[in-house]
Image (cartoon, rainbow, N blue to C red; front, top):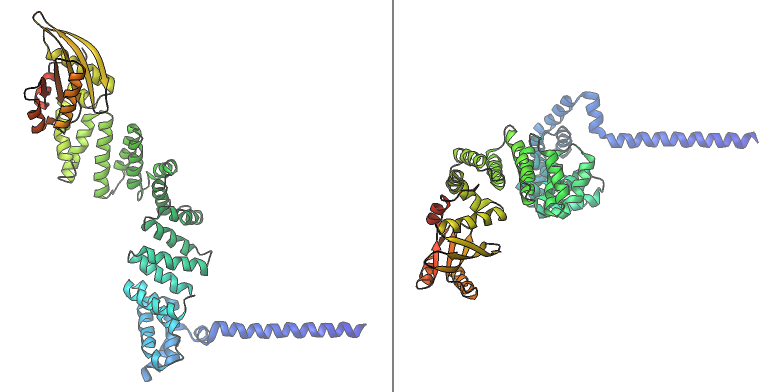
Length: 452
């Protein structure tokens, strides 16, 4: 009984010894002679040793490869470039040189020296030798990314995901590459995963909001933009985007708040600052707050002369600011506009009895049919009031003339804050239609009391 136990113990001890010996050999192979030499002599001494060998024989392949490894570990990219470029030039005459590794390391060195064309050229060569290497695909993708060729970058990073499914670096660049190429739906899964790994990454959060807004997740996008408004880096653009989204919802109060937060931030880039001022002015106009809108529009004129339609807006709203009736005519709600139009008819017929028979509200205008009565005559007339400030063509006037006849009215009046085309004026000759343009309307508005 004792002998079998001793035999078993002897076998176990022998196996353990073999494992230790094998592990030692593996460890030595893993560390390699270079690492061991560096540990014994120090890195600078080893470098000098190999440089001395190269001074006697510049084409000493082992010395070049040893120095290349050291420089690569130290991320001394300029020297990495030089050593591996020499090895690359020697490769046709030396089959022992690993061309895939050599071109890959030249490509990496080129990338960190911002030589992206060279990175692509050498990494393509490396990929032809070994297409399954992660670094080859990764740095090739990064070079394409830096060159703005996002579709090719996506192909490279997808390959990286196959080689290393859990790579956060591949997730990051896939997300950004899809985003930069406006493939917002495809970018979202990678951006979300990246945000889970780096929850404080504001750039990823901002890009997610943009991608959500572009793919219909407006409520979620708006929450992120609102959250990012105070951020010193992404706050200005987030305030702008939140404001635009609130404007589309006709929530001008919230939009103004967004823009005002953006305006209070420091070091806002001028292009974004001007956009915020411009959008905020429009939001104030949406609130009928002409004085504040004018203040911002004039501020834009001082920063960026000739920006968009600012000059014409200043001219227009300065006039509006001085004429409350004009503000009501162009900007008030429908009920206030209709009430003003009725007053305008009364002001047009001084010392006459005016009875409104019908009011029709359309998208572009308001029509009022009324009876006019004086001591000498009476008539049934129709007024059409346009709120536009553009030029109205003859087609509108022709249609109005048809309405005038169908309604059996005696006279018709087309009123606009803009003007009528020459064709429209020509058409009304000999017909019972008067065209009242901006100058005449402004004079008429001065006769009307808003509160009356």
